[in-house]
Image (cartoon, rainbow, N blue to C red; front, side, top):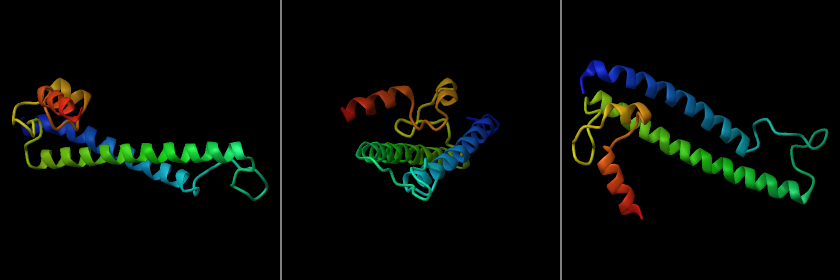
Length: 125
């Protein structure tokens, strides 16, 4: 892929990275209880009822799971930006084939072509 063709992808990746970093930071605050939560009393941020405790634990676990997924996505974005710097963006890391522009528009941090992605997915199962 030509350097000029990489520029719009770099911009999209940088914007996505900035948004995800903010999301992860906000989720961390919420999961750790330092963000905005609903008060259950004049000075308490802890739930009062057992049902509330269970719901809060579930919410915290769910938030931590989302954070992990977003951290994985951030890693893939950083790797894609590194490929742009190395001028290898758009080439499959598995077979060195071309990753189609359509795939990159849908998933700008894709590191593999469709064929290799399918093979890797099948190998996981």
